[in-house]
Structure formats: structure tokens, C-alpha cells
Amino acid sequence: MNIQYIIELLWIIFQIAVGYNLVLPFLLLFIYAVINGKKTKSPINKVEADYAIIVTAYEQTTLIPSVIKSLLQLNYSNYLIYIVADKCDVSDLKFDDERVIVLRPEQVLSSNTRSHFYAIQRFRRPHERLTIVDSDNLVDPNYLIELNYYFDLGYSAVQGVRDAKNLDTLYAALDGARDIYYHFYDGKVLFNVGSSATLAGSGMAFTTQLYNDCLAHQDITGAGFDKILQKEIVTRGYRIAFAENAIVYDEKTSKSDQLVNQRARWINTWFKYFSFGFVLVGKGVLQLNWNKFLFGLILLRPPLFIFLLIGLFCMMLNLILNPFVSLIWFFGFILFVLGFIMALAINKTDARIYQSLWGIPKFIFYQVLSLLKVRNANKHSVATKHFHTDKKTN
Image (tube, rainbow, N blue to C red; front, top):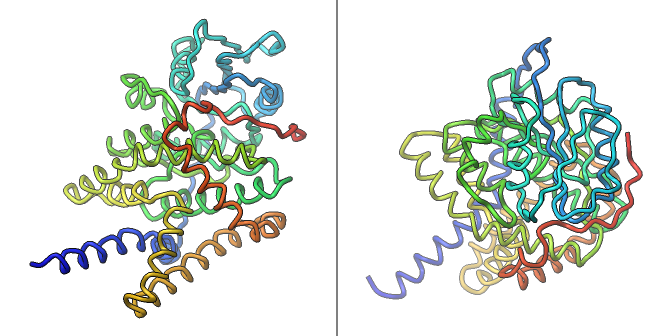
């Protein structure tokens, strides 16, 4: 076996490892269409499960009154709201409703999970379930009711939809397009073909017992706690359900510097945790477990812009090395673009998002810039700074 043969073999393996990400969404969509992708909902349980709603804030509390107002308008009665205001001035966080508990840690936590467990350890009663909501979110009035459908079906972890709250800038609209793509393929399609929905950091709910079992023994700092949590859940043999009507309205990045810092943290978490995918794929193969195998493949996938740029590089290089392979890459990109457009079309996407698609190259450029900050991403900030003035309170 000579060196040239080894190099050619490694080149083929590398292209397959990158290229399958272009066609996997379309393949999953085909499977989804064949099995019809429909799940029968359970009847509504007349006994309301007891929820703890944990709202985490770091340094900023400007948008908290809006999220609390929306939470108090839920079509549900059996819940308490715990605001964990880490490194925040809470002098203006005064609420008349006894269901709202404001917690200000004595020491700076600088960690999502530390904030969650700070609240859990101070629960006023033993809540059966907990849901995590960001301080910039708003919730649909039926949010908890929709989560209950899947808990009543026997699931212990449920991810809802993070819909765009603001689409007023190019970056916000493109961020919204990205979320639609991921919610459709990594949420609805992935769950309905028998695997698990990926977790999105907020708009997710768990039995309190499962959350404790997965994370109580770990001290997680920096971004990416949801990556560890989803790995722990799937490893334990659970599936994460996707509740497409359990909606939280999430604030999208509206400025370029905000986008760069946020994406730097997200890319950092992928490099830090993508190896979880190898573990789950291996367990899926050995245990003949479709959920673990497919979910592991998804965890191995790089951020969109990375594998798209690498794929483009491979296609261009093959124009010289092997034009036929370059043609295969071209068709792979065609399938990816079709899959992306179908995700937008199926989800009745806002016209402002379609109008923003011209800015995708610019959006990718700023994400490339974020790569320069990856190494020290979590030192820039532990939370995204928000500049959008919240106008939606219903």
C-alpha cells in the first residue's frame, strides 16, 4: 500500500464525511413523507401536572417583565415561576402575583445549569415537571398544554419551537430562517422518523427527576449545557419529543457584533462536544438502537456554514481532480437547497425571511469571522446582549 493510495483513500473518506450532511436532510424528509410523519395525540389529562417555569437572566433584566406577563397569561393554573437573576439589579423586579418568585444568587453563578439548580434547590413545592425559558422569550398561552400532550404520551423530555419574535433586521430574519430549518429537520422530522429532537437551550421541558439525573452531578460552565443534556437523555434510552405547537417567541440577533459573539460561543460548543456523536453512533450500532445512531449522526454535523464552505471547496477542487465527483457535489448542493426551501415553504414562513435570503453570503461572512473568536468564545460573554425593544406582550 503506497502513500498515494492512502492519501486518495483519506480524501474519499473526508468527502463522504462532509458530503452526507448535504443529502441527509432530504433523505430524512423522504422517510418522513413515506411514514406520513403523523403522531396521534393523547387525550388531554384533566389533572394539570405541576410545572416549575425557570427563567434565567444574566446581567440584563430589561425584558423580564414582558416574559413574566406572557407567562402569567398561560391557559394553565398549576405552575410557579422562578426568576434566577444572576449578577442582576433586581430592585425593579417586583411582581404582585404570588406565583412569581425572584431569586438573586449571593455569588455570581455565570452558568445556565448553576442557575437552574439554584432554582431547583429552592422550589416551593416538589414540581413534577420543569420548563426552561430565557429572559428574552415570550410564550404562547397554550405552551404548557401543548407540552402536556407529549408528557401524557410517556415522554420525559420535550422540545418546543422557538419562533422569531423580531424580524426587523437582515440578521434577525436570517437567524429566523436558520431556526426554521433546524426546527423542521432537527425537530419535527428527526422525531417523527423515530429519533429525538435536538434541544435548543430554551422552550424545553423535562420531568424534574430526569433533569436531576442527567445534570445534578455535573458542574457545567460556558455555553452548551443543552448539548450535554441531550446526550445524557439519549444515552439513557429516552427520546426527546418535539412539540411543534408549544411555542416560545425568541429574540433573534439583530446586529453584526452580536451575531459574531453569539456564533463564536455556538461554534465553540460544537468543537467541544461533537465527539458525543461518535459515542452515540457506536452505541446505536452495537445496541441496534435507531434513536442513538441517528441522533449521533446529527451531533457529528458541523455548523451549517462550515460544512457548506468545505463542500464548496471540495466541489471546486474536484473540477481539477475529478470532474465527475464535482458533479456529484453539485447535485448534493441542489438537494440541500431544495430541502432548505421546502423547510421554509412547509412552515408558512414570513415574507420578510424570504426577502432576507439575498443576505446569506453576508451572514456566512460574519460567521466565518466568529471562528476567530472560538478559542476564547466563552470569555466574551456568557449571554447574548439584546438590543431589540420588546413590543410583543401578548
